[in-house]
Image (cartoon, rainbow, N blue to C red):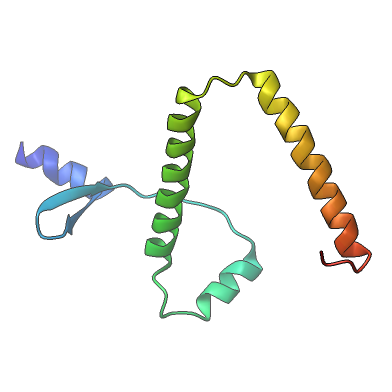
Length: 104
């Protein structure tokens, strides 16, 4: 068992969280534009891994909440399509108004 944990530890990080339990952490690689990386490098005070982890968690929570709400809904896909079209039209009108200098 010890040999297995040593091998496992080489590819997966364990982090002590809140002094109560060990959280299994895996590495994820993402690609960003060079300009974004250069801007990030100017802010060494920010722990980017923590920031991105938080953003991912929030986005996942948002999607999971939307799924919970959708499961309780009686709306059909056609209802969603109709609502979506109405939102698109309203947003297009709003964007056009902004472009024409009307901020209302």
